Length: 237
Image (cartoon, helix red, strand yellow):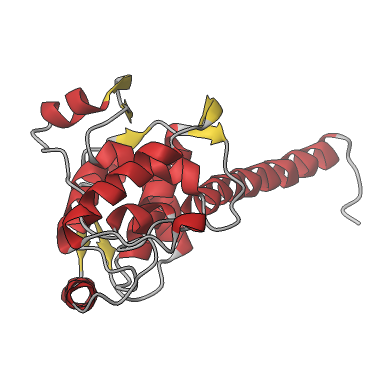
């Protein structure tokens, strides 16, 4: 089955099925309009950079360093540094389902054409998800105030072939996991590191998995209560 991403809102049922029944899907596809929006936004970003207009986190520093100017030829290194700086999570790791949910939700968000990422990053994330190569994400370390910065930084690291990857074989070296599937490490372009981490996809992914669990438990509870009533020859009222 093909998992289709378009400009239309994602159906919760379909996203949940992809997360919990991954084997049902063989590939991920994008609508033509979706990719056109991505390309248009990226081209607009590149054109704006040429004007030297300050764009936070793209040709400026972050936080208190926002007054510092970053030259265009240093923009890629800035994104690489941001991802490395944020990888300070701790605690247990997200489950495979939670990590997968985080990744597919982030992909949906980036394909809306608002973040300025390139089609190259979209296709790279597609490739990782089609091979079910997921980031190993510690659960602690992010407040979620301006996005799940720390959890999502591990996705940013995985795209570059850094750190660890979660696969069907367990936790393995990220570079080895990509090489096994003949996937080249990705080189983040201007703004792409910031676009990857500045969102709430980790929170949304965990919430999606929890919602599915709650639904299953609720149905089980209703069924168990019904059988108990029948076993005790109870009254339906």
